[in-house]
Image (cartoon, rainbow, N blue to C red; front, side, top):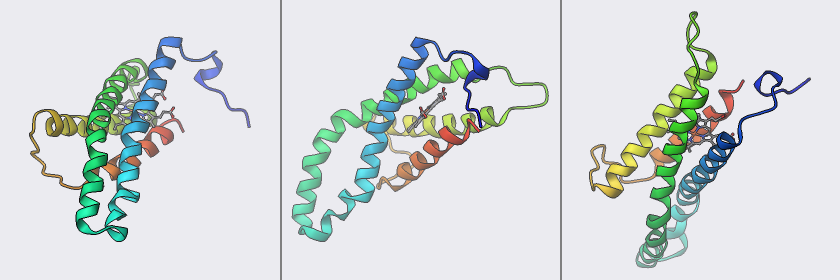
Length: 151
Ligand code: HEM
């Protein structure tokens, strides 16, 4: 089996590659926090008293708030740039698999971004999500889409 990107051309331009790499780092920081929160931090109450668990969470969240929301903004902005570069023309016979899956991924990512921005920077939480389970689920779906869209 021969694996070949871009129909055999050499690869993406350097600007795109740098933005792509930044997107991946920023998505790692944002998604990484959601994985850590849902898989491990949510279990702190099992080995600490409720007061200790709350204190430990506060100590961590103090730093999370400085880094994770900006990482989400960077993810969305770099994503919008890449979208504008790779989406391409819609063929007359309809959208390609890549275009459909990328559109879904971009929609979910944008939605997370707008929701996160409203919540953290404007204090608006119209969809009232108290836990991080829903964003966690969306990130899992987004990561899967980002891989399967290249099939
Ligand atoms: C929380 C939000 C997001 C997460 C966690 C995320 C995550 C990812 C991941 C893991 C990749 C794959 C990178 C790779 O395999 O090298 C990717 C690629 C991509 N993302 Fe996002 N993303 C998010 C938001 C967005 C948004 C809002 C857009 C566009 C509006 C977007 C557009 C893209 C594009 C176009 C690619 C494909 C780049 C390529 O293959 O050339 N992303 N994203």
